Length: 360
Image 1 (cartoon, one colour):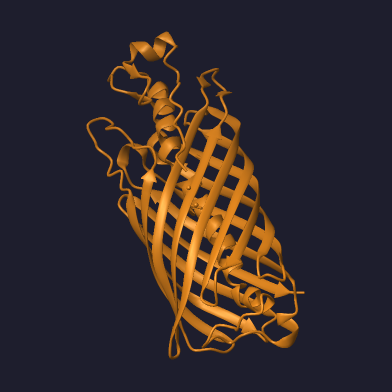
Image 2 (image 1 turned 60 degrees about the horizontal axis):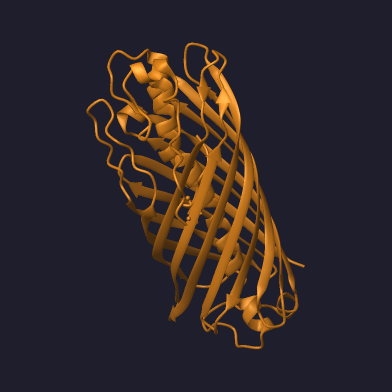
């Protein structure tokens, strides 16, 4: 279901988020099935299939990769757009442009305003059999920022998103849609070092089906935050950016009543993630290829307890590979087209991202 999201996720990338575990334990039917209210899982084998389906659904919401992927992909887009303006910020503060970089044209250097837009689409899957699912997460973001004379950049991004997930474990599905607003900043700490950060808030709608014609819908509140530092280095024709980020994302789905009168209580999910990695590009000019690798570690997030004798990997670390092309037009219009792949046990997350930026 929805949201944390990173994580930063800003899953994408992510502070510790408490896990609400109040559930359906008050119902005699659930108690008779051996329901353990803290873990949100049934251990009895005489439970009606619909009861087991609902309890597993709430367990699934806690570790559903969709919210994390959505939040972290949005955080990635915002951070990428902010740090891409580093030369403009350096020029505005009176420092020299980075050696080996294309730099700014006179008109671009004098431009205080910048607008950008990004679109991303991720193919996702969770391969732990008792909670098996697969789907797609899509996000659109647009932002505008201003660079002050001291080089500090401040802006705001607005976004819309949607996801569609087939929850094989209960013959059901989850569809989500939402909106996000996220202020962000970037501060040059020298000619080759910048710090960036963002904080976002959003609301969403969740529509779920559980098989057998049972359906339900509810609303969702989301939040995310990120803080990162990036160092730029040049080795001849190679430009390398090393980055470290702390990301947090969280979500809370409201309680709701299903079409068969069953009640699902409020459920929360969240992740705090630390990332470190590097991205390298070669050459200069209109089209510049790049590739990168990032290591991520989930510092705080819910784990899935064993279900029907099967134990989830609950993997907290992953590698994220990326590759693409940076596009530059006379220092005024720029963009990026790239692909990413997250390597995490029991999880598939591959995506494509496109951005465009224009100074005015």
